[in-house]
Length: 326
Image 1: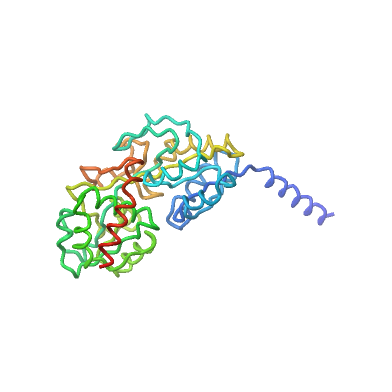
Image 2: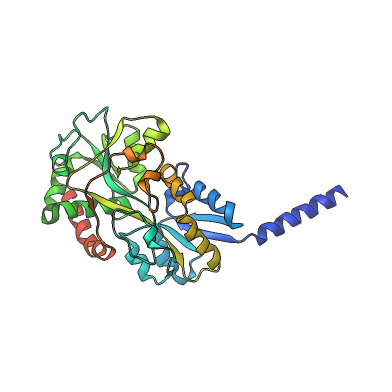
C-alpha cells in the first residue's frame, strides 16, 4: 500500500509540474552567474505568475539570427541599444505594451518594442591602491605612464567593448585612431567578455578595467571595500541601457505581458541596483537604495541612437583594430 501511495504521489507531482506553464527568457551569460540578476528576477516573478521562469543564456543576437522563427524564447532580456537594430530586423519582436513615460532615464526613450530595465555608463574603474593619480579626463588617460595597465573587452564579442569603441568615436571623432594609438601601450590585454576583464582586475593583474560607473557600488555595498572607483571624465561617458523585448510568436503571450509589466514594477526596479549593480530604468533617484545617490556619476551623457550606433559600428571597430594591430 505504502509503495502505491508513493507512486501515486510521484505521478501527481509530475502532472503538476507538467501543467505549470514555462516562460523561457533568453538572456546574457552573466544573468545566471552567482552575482547576476537572474535569481532575483526568477524568484520575484515566480511569486506572482504561477509559472516556471527558465533562463536560457548565451550570445543573444547571433542566436536569434540563427534560430529565426524557430526560437524557443518568449522574452529576450539584455540587448543594449547598440544592437537592438539587428534584433529588430529579425521581425521577431512585438510591442512591449508598457508606458515609456514611467521611465527615469537620462535620455529620451520612445521605442515601443525594446523596454529598458536598467542603465549605466561605460567607465574605467581603477584601484586606488595602485593608481595614485587617476586620470581626470579621457584626454589625460591617453597620457598615462605606460606602466599603468588596463584591460578592455573586444568590441566584436562584447557589448561593453562595443560601447567603448563608440565612446572613443564620440569623444575623439576623426582623431579616434590617434587616441587608440596613444592608449595602446597601456592596454595589457583585450578579453572576449567583461567577466574575464573584471576578473583580471580584481585579481590584481591590471590597474584599471573597462567597466561601468556603477561597478564600485558592488565593492562598496557588498564587500565594504572603498578602494575601487570609476574615473569620471568631463568629456562625458557613453550611456548603456539594457532592454527587454517580447517575442511576437510566443505561445505564452499573457505570461510574457505579465513579465514586461513586472519589469516596470517598483519591486523589480528597486531590486536592480543590488541585484544587477546598475541603475533602475523606472525609479526616481530619491527611491534608490541608501547610498546609491552619492555614487559619482557623469554630468555629461553620450548616447548614440540605435540607427547612429549601427551606422558607426563598423568604422569604430575597424579604427580600434587598425590602431592596436600596429
